[in-house]
Length: 167
Figure 1 (cartoon, rainbow, N blue to C red):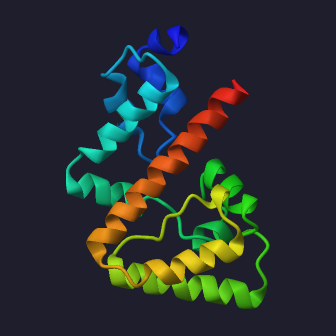
Figure 2 (figure 1 turned 180 degrees about the horizontal axis):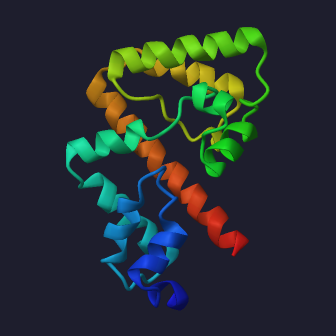
């Protein structure tokens, strides 16, 4: 942790700014909480930055996530982390029928809640993701906002672990 704690703001944001999807502001806020005693402490600072941000920033954070197997995947505009995560659950190799189903679920979820369905895909199978999509569509907006944020926190911990394991 000493080398991470020694980073200036720019270096820290350069290294960790992508942990939260297209939201380097989370790393910027977390940097202010140094020194970190552990990786858990660092992630907790990042989570706190997101958790206690104004609702509009939280919504922007959720909206920065791509649809599962959606137009960003087709266009090749997802972040490398999202590409790898979606591939880990087989979302990069859907049949035409599965792609149509996923597209319909993405549209229904966004229409109902105003933000994309977010799930830690590395922890689920394709079938499990579809099950969760259907189950969570029954929830209210407040519940789903909280569910999406909790999944973001899981995703970011997995990303942080992967980034530091690769370093």
